[in-house]
Image (cartoon, rainbow, N blue to C red; front, top):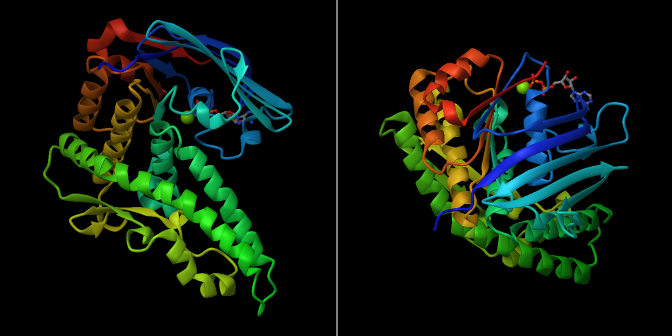
Length: 364
Ligand SMILES: Nc1ncnc2c1ncn2[C@@H]1O[C@H](COP(=O)(O)OP(=O)(O)O)[C@@H](O)[C@H]1O
Ligand SMILES: [Mg+2]
């Protein structure tokens, strides 16, 4: 079955970051957004990301995306899904976010995710290798929330109960024990949601691992031994038992010390942590493999071609990697791609074979 083709036709931005009021029409399959630094290229990609994913890729706090001095923002998009036209609106007013599809507000933002799938590759993505486990969980969650319709509901519910449990532990004076009945109720609710999340992570992990390995081989053109490991205490013990085992420790430290909120993905090169041993080039190859794997898994899971947003990645890319990426993007039935660069000429040269699908937008 061919995936549905997702095409963004236009976007309007009001009081969003540096855009007071702006409108863009997109006619190309490969949209090149050029302009000097600080002109709003990344912000425009982020607005697209927002309309697909209901939040910013760069600012976890919604209010930071409101134009300085304004009290809210509004983003509007018109999409085509194959031939069906879909209007998506995202507004933030007095710190309250609302998403609308064809005029109707979503009761739950989670219902929106995955219907307009998106994958972004940005310079800061190196934190996926170098940074803490929360970065990798964020990547993993953005993949799964767009692939599995119910994953985000479980994740939100888990985080809510986790906060309650941590609150209970924190508010218990040292040397005393918290209300055991309440703690047990919270444990069983946390376990229910946590186990769902774990099952989904465990189910999708082998697919991610295989895809990343295959893509890495293609991109790097080598047989370098890379490995991905899904690390979770739930591999050994179910969450209910784990919480019980850790109860004394949790009471002492006044927080929930283990659970799916501590899961990690471990990336290895020749059996060593990539963080410590991989070269710049190997890291770049791996990050591409990771993101393109995310693209392919979401596409396969939802039968919709995601939008691919490439922020400033061509500047430092060598010829080899460049040509692989261009081949990937130029594939028959690949979705729409948005690319930012300070240099129009560079993009013209890279995509000279794709003239029919190219559109250039210059930000002044
Ligand atoms: N909340 C905001 N309100 C107003 N301007 C903002 C806001 N956030 C960022 N900006 C402005 O946006 C500009 C950066 O845009 P950006 O998309 O990162 O540029 P580019 O990617 O083209 O280099 C900066 O001038 C910055 O001051
Ligand atoms: Mg930028």
